[in-house]
Image (tube, rainbow, N blue to C red; front, side, top):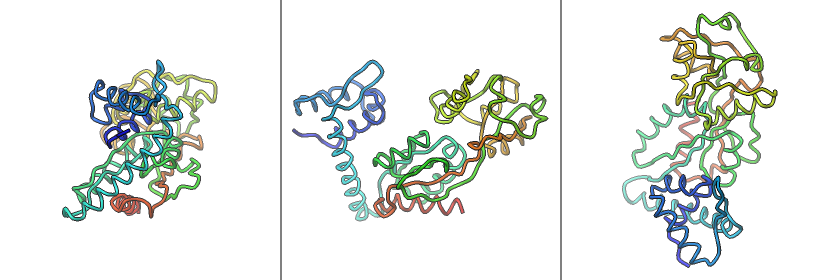
Length: 296
């Protein structure tokens, strides 16, 4: 059987996304081309690699074995490219970063911008995930660097402090809740919420917290950024839960106010996590060091 690196990379993307369509998009391949490659791989192997269901795909036992080897071979190929890149005038390669919503929206844009400006031959593949998912994926070698909430058990991963922030309730300045200095999450579940897309990590997190107290989260509007959430909250569409750093910035131009949440999970100590710093490619090590310096 002959599987090239494109085949292996495509298969990894499909399994991680749980979808041939999403995997093809990440591999920059047309859906038809991706499906043909997977079918050819299965024919060459003589066994199915994926279990196809209505809501996505999962790997068979043969697929799980292939995934394990694919990750190893792709990592070796990346290390080869990195070593040869030194002869081409500098380090080159791609770092895969998995981040929760808070870090991705509030802290990583500035940190990554300064890093990438200083390292023009390095690219970053940034993906939003829930913190507990990130820990598992970093442990499995799916990503190089993770940014997670400090409350999550990181197991045997190597961790470093990154930033501190807090989730707060944001309300319009003329909302009766604006007179409160603090409030519990359960107390506001009767209100309409303005939030991010339901598929976003933070909305899944909040929906889970609501379900744990036996209440639904009444998400009235779904947007793509915390700044947009604040804008609609200002217009009395509903209340929102956003990082305190967002409100501090947005309150200079919007008639909004933050109310502290009394829930323990509202405090967000953000943490960098990696499997092993010494095993990271040099450019990934440099990104970790850059993040730690920016945090200081």
